[in-house]
Image (cartoon, rainbow, N blue to C red):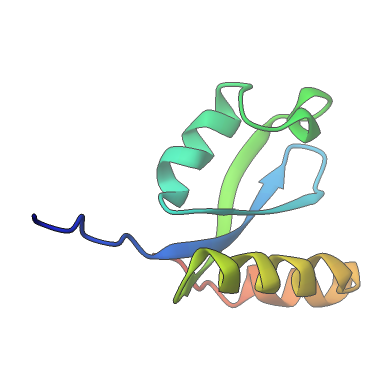
Length: 90
């Protein structure tokens, strides 16, 4: 039996057209961003479309990505903007 290769998980931030930031997790953030741009994947983007993937952070597991997502969502907007400005992308 061969075991499937484990894909890394990422927490990511997407900028909406209205300037707001959306935080989520995925094992393929580029594919997920494309889904957001096409109007699928999150109701968040119904009112303002996704325009840019501005931050990604690789995590060791899905559980770690979920924990990091929770932490980022608790941050003030200014702190999220600092993450977005850090330019950390895959």
